[in-house]
Amino acid sequence: MEEQMKLLVVGRTVLVIMLGAVLIGLLPGLRGRTAELERTQLTEASVTMQGITPLIAPGGAIPLNWLVAGGSVCQVTNVLWDTIPHPSPDVYPYRYRTRDQSGGMGSYFDYIIPVPDGANAVYVRAYAVIDGTRVFGREHAILVRRAINAGSPNERQDSTGLYWFADTDYVRKWYGFEGGTLRSVTRAIGGTVDDWIYQTQRVGLERFRCWLNTGVARMTVQVQFHFAELEGAAAGQRVFDIVLEPGTPNEVLIANVDVAREAGQDYAWTLSRSVVVEDYELTVEFRAKTGSLPPILNGLVLQGISAVPQRQAQQHIAYPEDDTYVTGTNNRRGEERILLGGNAQYHGGLRFNWLQVPQGAIINHASIEVTAAEDVYKEMSLTIYAEAVDNSASFASSQPADLVPNRPRTRASVTWHLSSSEPWLANRKYTSPELREVIQEVVNRPGWRERNALSLLLIANSQADPNPRKIWAREHDTSSDPAQWTRVWLTVDYTPRENYTPAPAPTWTFTPIPTITPTPTQTATPTPTETATPTATETPTPTETATPTVGKVFLPLLLQLLLKD
Image (cartoon, rainbow, N blue to C red):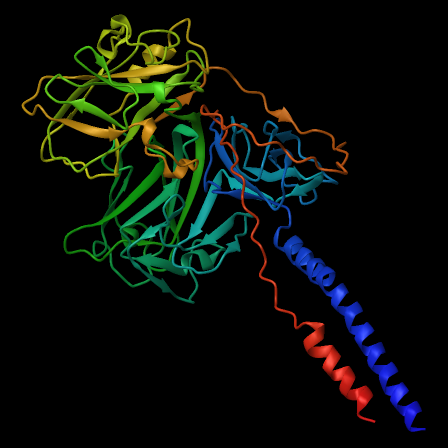
C-alpha cells in the first residue's frame, strides 16, 4: 500500500511538471498576441482636419491641412467638400473633392479654390485609404457668416436660424475678444424677440480679432454690432469710437457711438459697416472717450462678402550648389556660412528650384527667411535682385559670367539695410523686406514656367562697416527633419490668373488591398511641391504589463495541492 502511494505521488508530480511545461511554452505566444492587440488599438487608422479657418467669403480660397495616422501606407487621400452638409458620406456622397494624394502617415495640404458664390458655408471631411481600408474624418462647417454672443458662455440658435457662438478670449489664428468683463441680466429687452442675445455683454472691451487665412489676398467683411444699454447710463455718459482695421489704408471709423442716445435703456440696437482686410486678420478696436463709461458690446455678426483668392508656395535651398557667396573672383560654394555685406565685398546667391508659381500669377507677397549664424551688431546694406532669366542655373560653376555679381539682374530691386543698432542673435530667424516686385518681374517673363528655378542675388553695397553678417547655408543642415533646418526659405503668396473648376468626388469603387507590400525606402526629394510631403509617424510601442512566469506561480501551487495528501 505504501508503495502504491509513492507511485501515485510520483505520477502526480510528473503530471504537474508536464502541465507547467505546456503553459510555459504557450506563454510567449499569449504575451505576443496581447501586445499585438494593444498595439492595434493604439494605431487605429484615422484622418483628421487641422486648423479650420473661422470665416470665408465667396471667391476666396480655403487652405486645408489634415493628418493621416495609424497605418503604414496611404493609398489615396483628399478632402471631400460641398455647400450642404453630408452626415453620412457613404449614403449621401459629396459633390467635390481636392486632388488625390498618396504617401505615408503624416500631414497633407491643399486648397479649395474658389469658394462658390451664394454659399452659406463649405462643409469639409478628410478622407483616406490607409492600408487598404477606407477612413472618413469628422465633417466640419467653414462659415461665411459667424455670430458671437458677447458676454455669454453658451451657444444657441436665434429665431431666424442663425447659430450664435459663445464669448471667447482671443486665440492666435482663431478669433476672440481682448479686455473687458462679462455682464448679464434677466430682465426683458425691447426691440427683439431674441432677448437672450442682448441680456449678456462685454463691458470695457478693447479689441476683437478674427483670423481669416492665407488663402485670401483681400477679403471684404461686413461687421454687424449688437448693443443694449444694461447699466442705466444716460445719453452722453457712455460714448466710444469703433475702428475697423486701424492703422491700415482701409481703416473705417465709427465715431461717437452712444447706445443710450440711439436706443435708450434695455433696448436692442444694431449698426453695420464693411471693411476690406488685406493682412489675413480682421481687427476691430473699441476706444473709450475721456471721462466716459467704458465701451460695451452684446453681439457681433461677421459675414464674408467677397474675396480675392491666393495660394502660398514655399521653397527652401535644396542642394549644396544652390547657395553661395562671392568675394572678389572666388566662388565660396560649399561653406557652412554665407557672408553678406561688408562694404561691397560679400555678394550672396540663393537659388530656389522647383518653385510652384505659375507664369503670370499675381504676386501678393514674397520674402525670404534666414537664420543668423552668429551674434552680430554690424551694419549691413544689400540690394536684392532676382536673376533675369527664365530658369536659373545653379552656382556650381566658377566661370566669371556665372558668379553672383555678374549674372543678369531684374530691373526691380529691394534694399535691405540694417544698422548696428539692429542686431542679429545666433540661430534666430529673420525676414527680408517685401520682395513682391522682384519676384513678379521673373514670373511675368514669357518663358517662365511653374516649377522653374529662381535665384535671388544679394549684392553688397558700400557701407561704413567692412565686416559681414553671416547666415547658415544648406551645408549646415544635417538633420532630415525640416523643422530643424536653418537653410534659407522663400515664401510667395500669389493669386493665379486661371479659373479653377471644382473636381467632382468619385463614385466609391475602391477594392481593399489584401496584402500590403512594404514600400521601399525612398530618396528624399530636395525640391518639395506646394503639397506638404507627408512625414512618417512612428507607432508608439505599448508598454507590456509584466506577467508572472508559470514556473514561479502555477507549478509550486499545483505541487502543494497534489502532494499535501
